[in-house]
Amino acid sequence: MVFVIEKIQESHFEELISLFHEFANFEKLPEKMTNSAEQMMREKDFLLGFVAKDKDNKIAGYVTFFFAYYTWIGKSLYMDDLYIRQQYRGKGLGTILINKAISFAKESDCNKLRWQVSNWNNHAITFYESLGATIDDVEMNCDLIL
Image 1 (cartoon, rainbow, N blue to C red):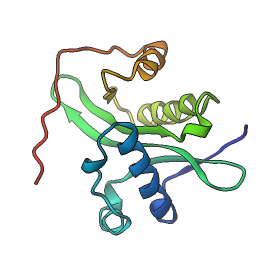
Image 2: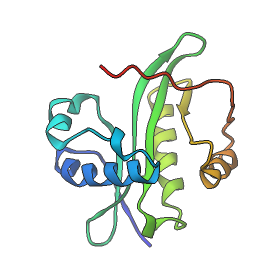
Image 3: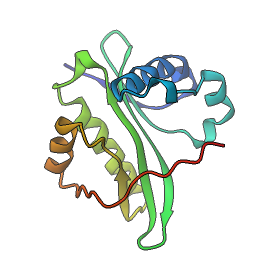
Image 4: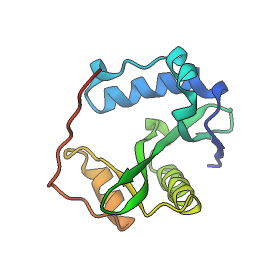
């Protein structure tokens, strides 16, 4: 299956919101998804990433990320989401998208790419370890919703 990879653009926002909802449901946290296409428009300068489109020009998956600075290592890229729609999984699309994020990080002179994985998502853990990622069980999320 052939996919077209594009940088996220405003024209993707409406369809991306639908995928964000799918991802929140996949993560068993639908109540936490509060974003909207209108909010994305207001905050578009902060949204970086890529979409993968299928032969029908529908978004099959996406990767989003943002720049971060870690005091121990410096400039880094934080991958917020990597999501592939169910019907496209197992076709190498996750690898394509994460490699786009890795390339973007390298081209941007980042020292690290960081992301999270749910401790119950064994398939993703195995996938990330196959890429050479180190997965620790030391840190826990701390969120303060404003």
